[in-house]
Image (cartoon, rainbow, N blue to C red; front, top):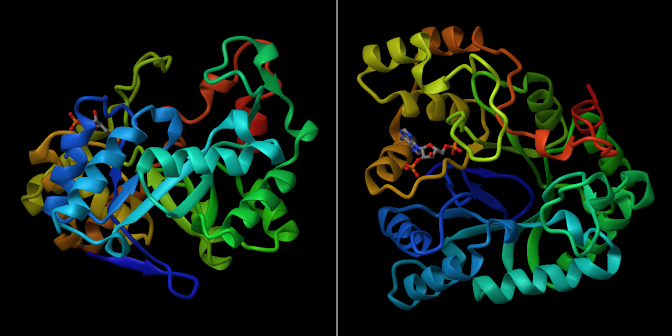
Length: 317
Ligand code: A2P
C-alpha cells in the first residue's frame, strides 16, 4: 500500500475507505471485507451515525488477526456542534468509545462551521453560531490537548480554504497534519494543493469519484457526471482500466490520499487495486484540462437562508 510519510512516525495509507452514507447494517460487513482485502485506512465521523458498527468490525478484525491496531489508520472528526472548548474532549472520547479504540490516528475539525450544541443537522439560521464568536484557534487548542492526552496521534482539518489554513498554521502550536476537501478532476484544487505541499500539510480527497448521487444535495441543472466524462472514459478504454480507477490514480499521482466510499466488494477491490495503476503523461495532461471548479457537495447545506455561512465565506473565494 502506498503511504505518505509526514511528521516523524506518521505515515498515512493513501487509499482509504470512505464511510459517509455507508448505512448501518451494511457498514460492518463493508469494513471487515475492506480490511480482509488489504485496506489499511478507514475514514469515519460521528455525524455519519455508523462509528459504533465500524468499531465492531475493527474489534472483530483485530481479534481474528486480520490486522493489528498499529497496522490500520483510523481518521475521525469533530462535529460542528462540539467546537466549544469544553465539548472537544468529550466528543473524541465518545468517538473512541464507539470505535472501541484507545486512540485514533487522525482527528479533524470536520468543518469551519459552528452549530449550537443541541443541533446535529441545522435547519434554520438560528442553529448556527458565527465563526468569529467561537474562533477555530480556541477549538484547535483543545485538539492539541487531545494529542497530549494520547487520544489521537495527529490532528488536522477538513473543508479549510487556504486563508483559514494559513491563519491556523500561524496561531497553532501543533501544525495541522492534513486537510480533507472535496477534490476530483472537476474540482482540482490546484492552489490549495500547492499551498499544502509547501507547508507540509497532507491533502486528502473526498468525493474523489464525484459523488453526484448524494441525497439532500440540491442538484444543478445539467450537472456534469464525472464518471461519464468522455475524456476520462477514453483514457479508461485506452489503458484498459475502469473510469473510477482513472480518477483515483490521478489523485494518487498528485500526492493526495483518496477515500472513495463503497459498500460493494467488487468496487472496493477495484478502488484498492488502483495502487498498481500508473497514468501516463498524456492522461495526466488531458485530465488537467477538465477542471470546472465544480463542487458537488462541499458546503451548500450550510448556506441556508439567513445563515452566517455562505459558500463565499466558507471557501474565501
Ligand atoms: P457503492 O457504495 O454502491 O459502490 P464518492 O466516494 O466520490 O463519494 O463516491 C461514492 C459513490 O460512488 C457511491 O455511490 C459508491 O457506490 C460509488 N462507487 C464507489 N466505487 C465505485 C467504482 N469503482 N465505480 C463506480 N462507482 C463507485
